[in-house]
Image (cartoon, rainbow, N blue to C red):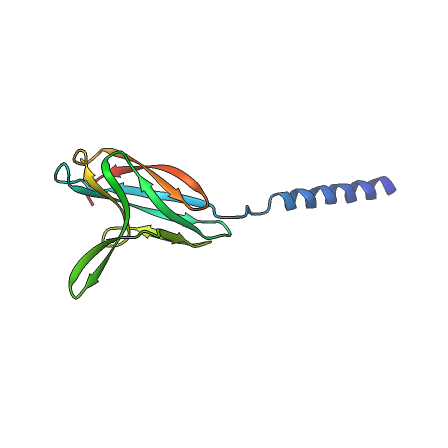
Length: 148
């Protein structure tokens, strides 16, 4: 009877130890989905990519930059309406991705802007974009160019 009791205690301690080891990871846990961009009408024009960034971790993170070889410059942008006029501007500080939250980059709002395209973006094309996060580091995503 003592052997059974001690065996049950040992098994319980092992299970408790394993549960403690499987706790949620600390820090930001970034997931990117729904990456897409619009076709551009001309070379040397501009283009944009949109995506959803989710942070399932316990700490805020920040998207601080993006790069791609499709254009001379890549910037994080936002758009606002001011007296009926749409204004676009570079967001130098990037976008905070809150712990347990998300940020959506979408038409008419936040987006990754390609300035000075080397070639026009065409439907069906895949554009590689490298995103850099303050804490999570760099992540490469593929943006499918498609009609909205």
